[in-house]
Image 1 (tube, rainbow, N blue to C red):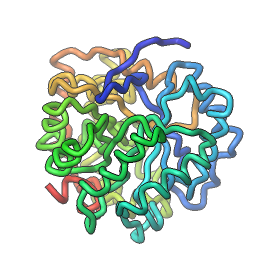
Image 2: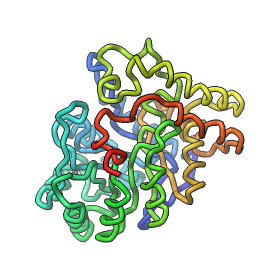
Image 3: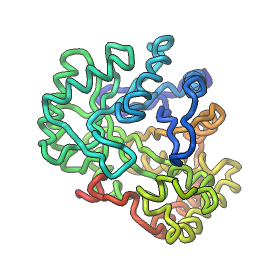
Image 4: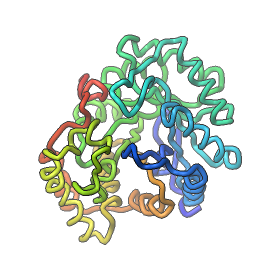
Length: 335
């Protein structure tokens, strides 16, 4: 392994400083899925590099991603900090997605995930989205029973408000919050991040590279007509692209100055922002490339100057369009 660094999130959970999102997802519906053997090779390469925090969900590939991760665990279970999620029903990539978190549903999901993963324990079990029809105390109470049963070691929550986080934490300690947070998505800093810091809960930002936008891999030409980012996320639509490409141009300038990639700079800014809040941050990044895993991991150790951080701080105010077309699907719409 190339790194022995560990990050303490909360509730006694320690992880590698970067997580690999094992979605291996694509955004263009006409593009073929990543071959399983290629995806598995990337997972093995990540663990070899020291990225041992592996993140998946029952909704990814309708359970297929958990089965893929299970193939990694068959050989390397003791090396991996395993995170998976439950609670999203319907199609994750379409308007039909919904959330479910009633007490009876929670253990069913856990048992199904354990079977697909081929293991007897989940290190970090997330509620993927709160169910608006079920008090979060009920959902977390059922998750706490999984901890008592030895099936789950730690509990996490995704896209919760500060109030939901406090209520959940009062039922059972929460180890981590996973929400979108990046140099261009900072709404969580108003309420959720301060609440997590106060309660001693770590943060696992998803889409820390803006689904490629902050890494410099998205352009008007690269967004095909069937790219789901255009449908689900207004920032990627034609009317918002010029303003957003201009807004994130500061990342390239800082990257040139720092002798780093745009992805590394984006991750370094996020971790520095966490330090400013007194909050441990472990970004979760999805990639198909073993080389990108190593590159991204190096970004977690990059230290930016105060001037560079200040320059990046101004990006979010110039961004056009919300981060989701349905703000009730994310915490910003419910705060």
